[in-house]
Amino acid sequence: MASPARAFIAFDYDHDSNMRDLLVGQSKHSDTPFEIHDWSVKKPFTGDWKEKVRERIRKTDVVIVLCGQYTHLATGVAAELEIAREEKKPYFLLRAYKERTCYSPSSASYTDKIYDWTWANLKSLIQGYR
Image (tube, rainbow, N blue to C red; front, side, top):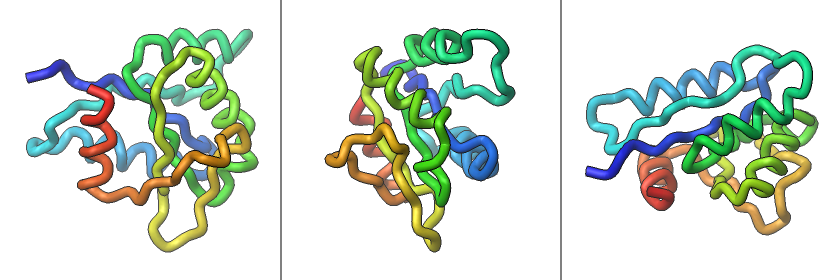
């Protein structure tokens, strides 16, 4: 079996940390064919936070961007996505809420699709990078 995927989860800390927790929890179910090594930042960094985030993103296989109602205003998420692209890390955008309008980060490409957060999509997207 392939080694588990290491993922950095970019999310709006002020509005979507509960959804990040759900995503990490979902990855721990016994029937999950992958494991998320969560390298996301739980507390604000001091100093050059972008370089510290860059170090974490370099250690991952894929970046998952959780998109919520205010993600387009979250400058940290926009910076994390820019760093992922600079580091040539694959990424995908995941709709955090089924019943709400969700927005991509301001740094996202107009061609980036926001995928529905379903078990099938998540498995397929993660396995596509392993």
